[in-house]
Image 1 (cartoon, rainbow over the protein chains, first blue to last red):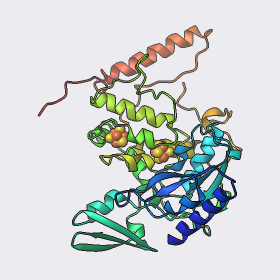
Image 2 (image 1 turned 30 degrees about the vertical axis):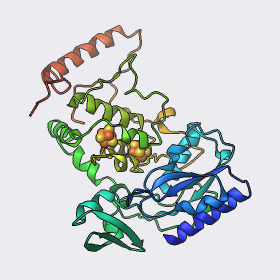
Image 3 (image 1 turned 60 degrees about the vertical axis):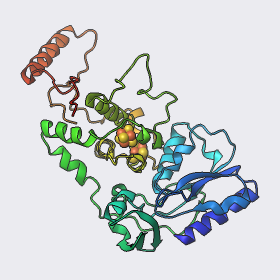
Image 4 (image 1 turned 180 degrees about the horizontal axis):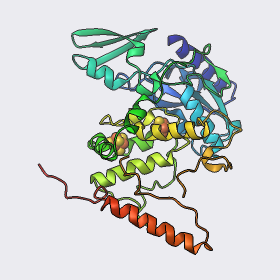
Length: 316
Length: 49
Ligand code: SF4
Ligand code: SF4
């Protein structure tokens, strides 16, 4: 991980010094452990704040929407790179504007899981290859990295950036043996009533703070449907019907676009796994059209393409 | 999400296909009637502890 940090600083420094980019978007340490924050570096002498470790889970494609700088460097792990591709396809940024610093990723650490496993407040987290060392007041515990990965990273198939101009390390091996959709299938097997109750319980703690929407690179509409007042698409209350309407409509807006980057889930202050909605759609897009979002700049997404062989047994 | 199968229907009907339209409307009404009213999307009073 330290090697990645050094390499990111070196590349960022070079790009800025040679005026190849006006700024580099990457991560710096946050004020709390496991809370790295996005940062915008504009001077070569400031690249030392850039870091890379298992707490860089926020999706940096989110910060590219509509940017007007002519040249931007951006640090991108596998999922970020796929969302960058999606951004380019959706005309939110131009490929020529970007210098993509690709990071072959070995997964992000699930901060909630680590906190829950710790006997007290977590004050520091250090990563050393496969080992994750957690320290707090009077305790030190060691975890295996693969046991404390974010749920989406544990089943990720695209850890290596799909698009990049620089690479900070050798590509990592992809996880081909994982079962990506076990959780979605379990829910698909429930009856309608059970599904309803399951999601009722899942969404019960939601505050409608919209952190999930704000963290998602796909949610870039100037006025989100939840904020609109004329017409008002969805009630603004905490009523479970309104909360659910917000969640499933947001999920539908991500259909065929979501990369399962996990930014939304990571951002939620109350730990709701709203990815279950987007993941179902991601699974459907894969099974119906063989589509995985953000893999190619050439191919148009399924929802803006017509193919005579599209499945449509639901239309009578 | 927990919406019963049979509550939502999709159909392509051209503006010239009035007979098909009537048939589909009848089928949809019948199917939805059998399911009964949709209570799920009715806003109930929130429980206050
Ligand atoms: S919906 Fe969540 S997982 Fe999907 S792209 Fe947006 S932030 Fe990432
Ligand atoms: S981040 Fe969590 S609490 Fe906030 S709106 Fe999304 S699901 Fe609800």
